[in-house]
Length: 419
Image (cartoon, rainbow, N blue to C red; front, side):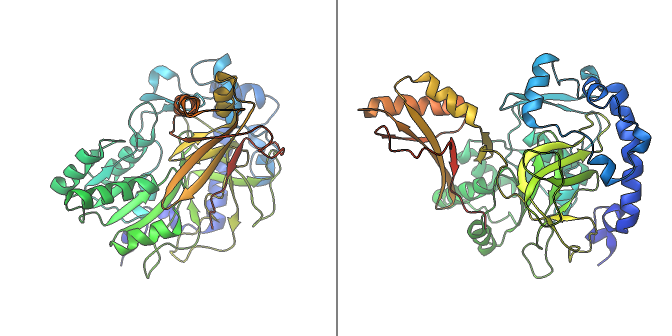
């Protein structure tokens, strides 16, 4: 097998020292551009000399920007809080994600660099990709779509929902590749079985937006579908991706994208932790349009020692290991403590509430447990409607008597195991 069959490009097999030199050289120019063209970075980096940004230690002295900062800055300076170095009028698209947080898409091809992750998952030119990420307001659909097109893959822009129509399209169009959340592929396969439709054309999948649990991956493997996952966010695009092991299945960990400088910091701080210690993922994305510098995703992970057996030489992370705060990702959507508080404020009958997230079968289930004196089913239904309205995800409601919830400060209790 040639190198062209193994790697998306030559960057993936660079000598690590060469990569570090080239990335540090690019970092200085990246920071200089951000200071000059992005008002937010011009302000927070006003005393920073870009010429001195030539090492990881120098990068670690810069402040971390977190998602909550995006919300505040975008409120002060719409639309993107001054973090953009390209004017909105020269962008290709603008998106609105829960938070609310607004993200730009630059005009270049494969803006989010997703082709690299798709290639590692076995997607190749000419293969039809059934893409079930949403194309409406949030960028997930466009992220995978642009990456697939960069590889030369035609795309079925399936989006979310319309499950019966989707399985009919799969049976007729015969896509070989799937992109979507980990759970939704099973929904489609089960629906195809129920309708007596053939979905066996799907042989490869790249999933994201939630945890790919081992039992779910094995279930896909049993159906002949090689399934890998990638780690990406609406702001950053591709951060890291799994690679295929020689005997099938994934190699350990996720390889970091070539245009990302990744750090792991102690949660809530700007301080990097030693290699192997679990902490908060902070990335600097070498993106000239939206030059995120030390941006915290709010996710937890850790750097793995050594290189991947696949031959890619960049650092690896363990993958997604939960949230640094109490935010949970449920069915591909972030649910935050402030959204739970909105539900509580909307119903004065609720004395206290806690959102419990569990894994039942192969699905994420969330239940809002509410302390309500003498609550009834009618109130429970109204609260459930508010959960969907404020959290954008359906959830069950359980009413308990005052005093039954622990007094431990938890608003979201994620009880899923990621082992």
